[in-house]
Image (cartoon, rainbow, N blue to C red):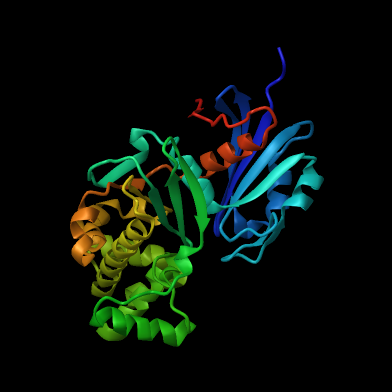
Length: 340
């Protein structure tokens, strides 16, 4: 019996990197080992991969989802000062087939492997065959489209998170002016991200008066977005609560934009690290109202399923699928299952 081929999959974000080594078993993949790394402790993915792989582990193919656009199997991360060269990594670790892919493109490939317990429905809608969309706020804002070809959905990468923010009312116009003063160009990522939550708080703080000493002490010791979210969910600070509610509202609006631009009758998936942490507020807040609020297309959007992805390793699963697709002899056979 021939030895199973090994695949290396990675999800390289702005904050953390997840790596898993898989063994190929027909149409399925079996995890052999996995680990996570805090990126601030490393000079780049080469150092992380070197720590992860053991001598003698011959990797047949590898794929890494990375939070930035990819050009010629090379990229510079948007929210981290790393430059990654796929050819150099392949040579360093003697991997014949290695691809760098956009992190949302990887996550989109992983969507097809999700189980019922991996998702939380914000809107049941009326499930249909057709395109789907993915919107994911975390360290940054990623977006992708899953095109329906009549039999299956094939992802397409996108940098839609950097498109122009469109204010919908006077408050958001005021927010636009505030952010334009800070950054010049105001994209959706400037709002729908961890740093965006912090900026939303600062915007409302500028309208609500001086910052309480209690909050100032927390901000000195903790991540600003985490503090704002925690304070908002506990109902302790007005500016924090207003910031989170506006974040949720604009998140819903942009998810609705993606649904229309991709005609995502097959559903919209909400990924990234933020949504699972504020799930109750997403479900009870203005997300779905903003998602549907598109004038003459409100009825159409009320029928689009909207689901929050709870599995933080979805991007890693998708990278594994892409690594498997690089292997010779697989043809068009897709990975259908990740074994325990």
